[in-house]
Image 1 (cartoon, helix red, strand yellow):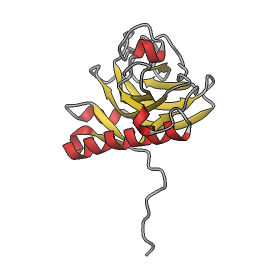
Image 2 (cartoon, helix red, strand yellow):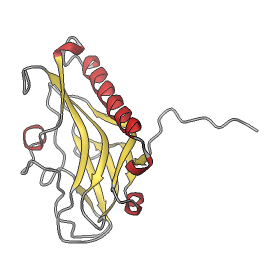
Image 3 (tube, helix red, strand yellow):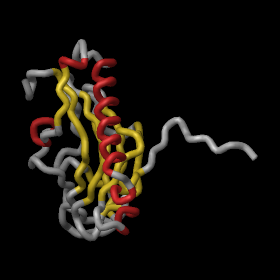
Length: 188
């Protein structure tokens, strides 16, 4: 019998209640390391000591209407809605790298069934997608991505959720992530 091997890129959602605190910390560290390495590869700064890692500020970083994670009202089942409110697909600033490592659906019952990370205005490239319905069976509807999702400077982030319940209301789909940028732009 042949040995089972792990794919080079494993794209699964790990429910938070199935993880230890150490696991969760490691997912964050992996996301930071991936983002910093990508920022160095893209010459955002000459060295890691000249970079800052911080949480996103939705209005400043993604040009959203509100400084929180909220979709547009979910009016039609099986329709995709941006996680960036009224902004369909924000562009990463030229001096930043954006990395996402987890998702939380803070609307009950969970009205969305899938989150898809795509690139480009027309979503020509799909980076990953994750089943959010599996979180419905947990007290904490949150999960960590097996691999961080990294967006380069000037890439267009087209991140959407697919509605499974037409609530007519916005859904709070919160992405855990980091902005990696040179010191001084927002933090000294």
